[in-house]
Length: 196
Image (cartoon, rainbow, N blue to C red):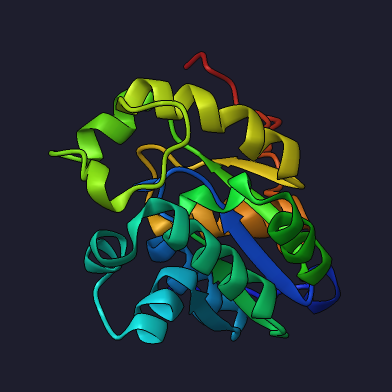
């Protein structure tokens, strides 16, 4: 990881990464947390801890309606400071929970085109994914995109980019890393003649 001087005052108390599953919330979240020396909080892991089961088993066990209730409750219990928080992609279905997340910090939408999501997800695990109206991946994508846009404070394209690059883009947008200085064109040297 490159060593850069960060403008600490530009980094909010918490950063909340929102977006579709396979958008890189956990991967980028861990990298970002390490870079800014924050803790990383994965809401899916908190749900798994609560039920002592993997996420897909939780949904099988309690059903989608109860899972959504549990997911919202877990989000509403968050009281963290100096954390990068990655809620599930379905967090945007809960207005009260999203207001709570926004009160904790800045919401960063990791934008990934549908074609890229399809590449990242070989078999869409519909059973472990919360969906309200859309039961296909394209329908779910269309359903959620306006919600991510509504709650986002910042938007970052995370498609075909490394976690390090996405992290740096987020920090630049926050003002924690100064923008790259434009490269100066080399001036021709005086007194040098092209003719011989």
